[in-house]
Length: 344
Image (cartoon, rainbow, N blue to C red; front, side):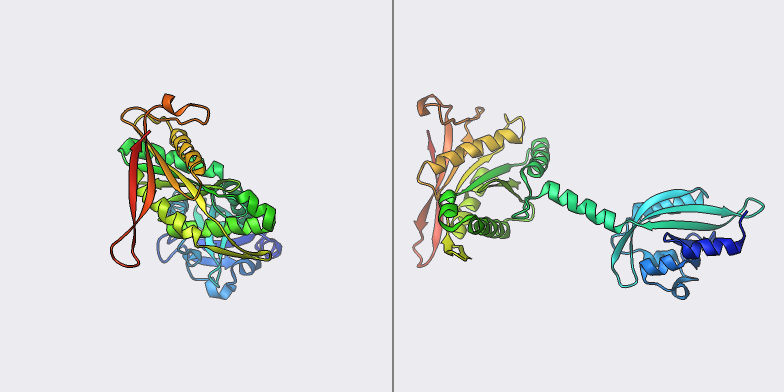
């Protein structure tokens, strides 16, 4: 067995954080700190004389996982070692992560008299993991969800709406004549337009809506608890809003418009892809009806329409086409929306 002097030399010189607490009490006001090494002060900002005699709970904060804390408490009560990752807080309130091992210390008679906690700073590793997760799930230009992450969340929402028979709609958006913007103003200006559209769109949506960059100049919105007509009204509001956005770039001011295609979940849809294919067909219709407009496809009865560019209109399944027309209210300055439904 090493002497106390040798232990202190090791503890004082290691880069790992060492905390020793009394075996009892484990509940408040415990566990009581009886020793910390210099690495503890370097990591937490607390001097030894500030924490000795106080509980290790002083390091916990709002985001400290209560389940992890409970697991530590259970291990200590059963006098067994445990290893966990835990979010704690420095003296200045800054968060830090630790990989921590807690082991019981026994006397010559085998009785547990103390617990030793040996921890290593994981903050940089956790931050890197979060950055990698963010890169894997978001579009680097706009900060919106990317296609893969959107499909994961959209499929989950689809299954939920299917299970509980809730409504769900998808809106596909495409910036009109975006190639001309790039050709005229340059790709950097085009990127600024994409960012401006992203921000303006996000500001109009509810917290429950899911917005993503689908690819290029195309965006997609998933709207839980929303019928087709509600999505049409939202898309028309968004179309008008974006038409008023002015993007100031080095090559001059840019204004742009969007086209929108909309579809809602039907009872025959197998997955979210079926809904998105109808929304994409509606977007295709909008692009070929002069752009800067909103079109929606609804399944008719028990049939699901799958419009195709190469399928003659007369041979397509019957579907409802919803478009939005402006209708001026009798009161000055008021503009209302009239949703027009027609069978094709």
